[in-house]
Amino acid sequence: ITHTQLSQLPTWNDVVSMYGDSPKIVGLETCQTFKETISSHSRLLAPAGVFNSGTNLLAELLLKNCVLPGHGKGTGVRWQVNWGKHQPPRFRNTHYLDVSIKNNSVIMPVVTIRDPYSWLQSMCRHRYSAHWFHPPHHCPNFVPDERDYEFLQYANVYKRPKFRKFHHDDPWLVDNVMNTANFNKTQTVVPLYVRYKLINTTHTSLAHLWNDWYNEYIVADFPRIVVRMEDLVFHAEQVIQQVCTCVGGTFAATDFQYIIDSAKHGEIHGNDKTSLLDAMIRYGSRRRQDHTRGMTQDDLDYARKVLDEKLMHMFGYSHPIHR
Image (cartoon, rainbow, N blue to C red; front, side):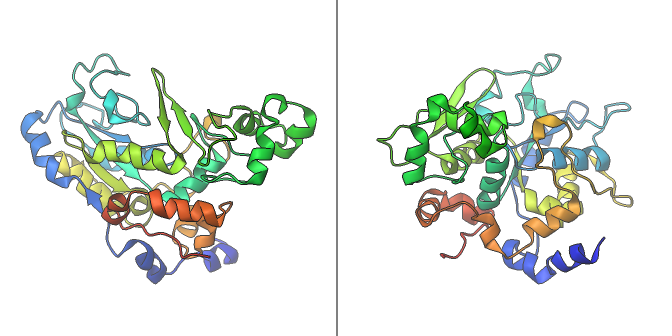
């Protein structure tokens, strides 16, 4: 660790002021139902979460520190839920990545959620299969400004060199403007759609995607656990222990293995890869301006108005102070 990194690390008081002094885990009360209805040797544990929510980190922590009975040399931990970790739970009874699993109810989904303001910043860096119109100067962009409308008129010709220079010829970033995602000059909010394997879902805005995706799991009528991504950074051992024992697994209490390097591997994740040290610096900082970068005052006002307050309160998240 360098002196610069050491100086950037948050104090424990900083972390507690943002997220409290203990993890917030929703759904532990459903563990007993899961254990009563699924035999111990059939149970599986698997992550789920919207893009950029820490699902890879959770998977690696579980794989290294939790073993479910009855799986031979395996652990009973899967890399993702069988209906696709980024797909909402409406696909649980219709989509099977592993066709050898005949009933997805044997899987206890562990859902990762993240502070919506830092999540928005990650979505701007790498959007995966979420599509919404956002020019280079403005992201997150809920409420379009004059330059948004100015860029909109060039969407059809944005492949030309004079426009590509704004994005260093990165085809993903060029597509952010070329694919208007049903946005037009009459609209006062920038809409969004997500392309899944079987269908597309539409959302009023990027903020609504966060609301819509997580509320499907919160109101689900099947066992599930929801954990904060930030707790996987600052309370990893405590969270993994509770998740593992929830389904009757054996927790590596005396030899817990942290994930030091980025849990994201491969080109699909772009350059948005964060080590444990980087994550502590990024998510434990009180410099909330880092979480509102690119947003106008109209965007901040809109986020405060539409982000689901029940979800915000349930997971201990807060809005940034007005500029």
